[in-house]
Length: 341
Image (cartoon, rainbow, N blue to C red; front, top):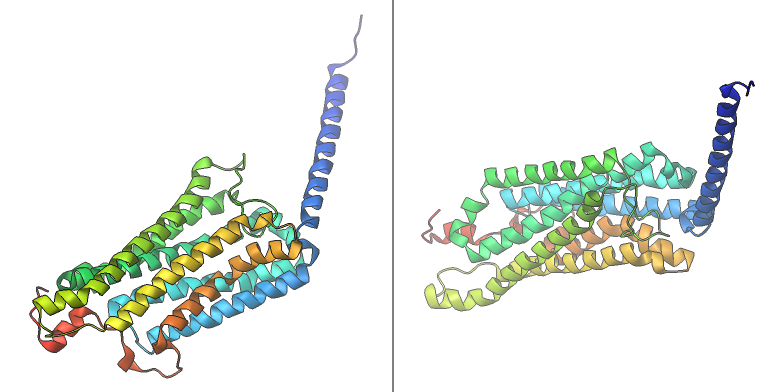
């Protein structure tokens, strides 16, 4: 007995599968729509876009001014200044991302962020965030070495070694960015309704843990190095009085301000990170947006404002070379103090 061609059974199976896929797609779209209704970014995208644009321009303006003061005003030494230039440049590039991409896309239609290309561009922002974290660590270690091992400071932070450290910091940032750009599965603060720490089945566990552990480790390392520098600075006067009897004295007040600046940055950026990661807990749409996406956009501007507050040399438009931050090693040469360098 003829049972009919197998092609009919195959077609029926295909039809059932297509119906199932269509229903799943409708459910997925409905769930996404319900999530978007809970997000200020999607409900009030014009206001959100304007706020993100303003944040980007503030970050670019403040850090651009800092970059100008470092390059033109030469308020820091050559090697130390290079670390600051790398840091300010990374902040400026991060701010440009909000000006030319994140802000405009939010104004046009935030759903565009769900496309693969937009996600890859969005995740490339880590290329500019990582150098800032590493630069903060290098600045703290630089100050710690300067006050702890003044006679070897120019050996450990010579022009060539400092330049190599800066280059390696950007290479590290590229290495961090590549897997995130290839497979942009990590949560970002744009999705303010979901915890950043929420594990995603489509994302590598290694990448997820890396995104959590690395910034935290850099923050802790920066805080430890800065604590060492502060401890040495507070014990330095007694040591110099006993060993040197006042032959020379470093600009202690300026170094203390710099160390307290680094400590303030670690604390403030740590608090910002905490709010950004846990801001999804706010039920109010506006508070939810302000404590996640908006703080994420404002991080560069806040960091730059802290630098301006603690560095009095940057509060003028004049390019004045008399305010250059000096190290113990440079003061040794001025006072003709013997050095092992």
